[in-house]
Image (cartoon, rainbow, N blue to C red; front, side):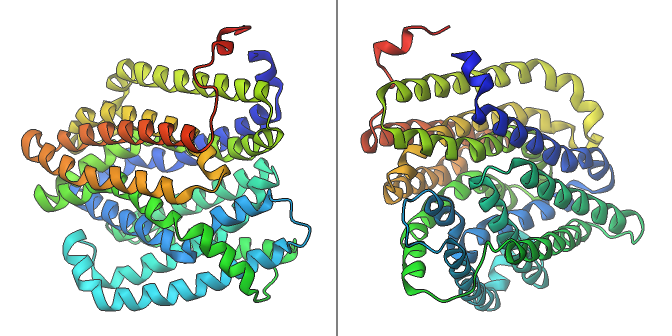
Length: 428
């Protein structure tokens, strides 16, 4: 079986996606030794909170239409005008951006008080989200068309521009935490313009209003927003609570730990980008033997994630003193818990695909939002009892609960032979 996997299109494309993700993640990762020696933990904390706002806003910008675009591409519908469908996703982008702009004007001061991000930078954050939507639209189309090289080039370009402009603002203009937001704004603006040009040139988008397309996008995407927000609550509750219960300085140290630990999350996301199109095609065959192979492959991925956690226990303490500045050395206490959490999150992503395949996104939203809401009191009390490390322990526990609950749900909505005796035949 292993030999077949190595020769498969999934392995080849996921290999490119994974390598791209590693390169893409390594660029901001390589900035850590610089930023932790230039920024104070407080500066790093403000940058972290700005990133959290960007991630919370993103699902509402374009109402997460990328999932609908991804799923629609694989539907056998001869009447579907796919470029028009993409164009109507852009119409939703306009409506949602205007609505968010009004909300920022009304509640901007409230957001600033709880995040330590100045009010005037919230508009910059909104612009970053809009640009990311445009770029992500092209990346989604390249994913479904299995064009991993183009996907990788655009992502890496954005990261290089982000790092380059950030360093320019730090060393040439001597900006503080603002340098990271300005670097991000300029880099995503450039890649968004490139993406929009290519979308039009390659005829991937056609701006014709269609009520049926809008209805289809919203019917798929709206139920996903609670699911996405639930995932974000799990991911970001810790830093929001640390900022308000302890200090933005502790948030800065914790964020460094989170960035290092989240490298595994980036690899997971890159792999899933290649895995989901392959999974949908295989599930369309509705063949039991194919399902057996899918389950075996899933278990192999689970094992790989566990091995990553084990290796991290021994490797990270050896390299951390060289990687981060003295003010951030206490991050070692949080990193291993965060890596464990991302291992469980990788397992969660592997079983999510079955739920998306049968379009039971409402049920997935219930699971994700429930675990996210559970994370708030759990993280709160763990912070009270154990200090900042309690946030990382809470994160690992919640990701494990989310994985188990989603796995159970996926088997309810689309039964797979997870425990079939045939799994143990011809393992080699």
